[in-house]
Length: 329
Image: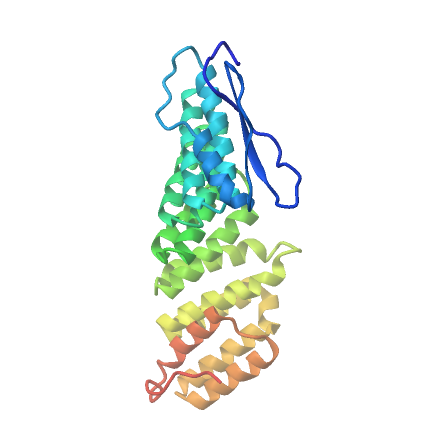
């Protein structure tokens, strides 16, 4: 008995060692110990019924102080962990969510946020939208507590769910931008830049070229004077120039001159030399020369999917190359 509370209290015993990997629950009530009921068979078969017995079936009312709510939090958390072991992700997420709400009744913000995150991680495997709802609830608590770095981390998790599960790139961009803002506020510029590079890459894919250019140029300018990061600056200026190129050839030429003036090391880079060859081929409307320049670059530095997409968009603007499969090789 705890805190004068009557009724059944649950004590989970460790799994009984046996060849059958049996799992059991011993119930102990006011009238003395009940007979132990051991369920033979695989653990997962026994975990769900045990979790259901642990989880309160009705909302908990704060009668008799906070003790009952604390016990209910503990029971929901134990139930959620058993549902996780049984890979019943929706039930685990729901139990963690109930625990989070009870923690808020107890004014335990940190525990509530932690439970919402646990709920989100469980729901990710079964219900992506519900996972986002739980993670947003955790973010609201963390921002209220001033824990912006943790909030930023969970915005990234939501962005990744939108990327891979729900395939909503616009919403993914919004969460990466919010994450970057929080990281900047906490002076975590490296983490902020990683988020912004995701935003720039997706913005270019969605043909929001000006937005992508501004981000690539900003990060390139910020990194070119850093001894540890300056070698990455050429990649950012290269990507910005490609976005300019898609919009207008003259813009690309002017941008290239600006980048060489800002960052002299860019002039000797393979990326800058490729851009000059592409500009020349495009000006001459020479599709073969364009393709040959790309092939030569790709033979040494493999093009990723993003670069391939951008280069194909530029190539399609060369007269007579609008037909066919748009191959670069």
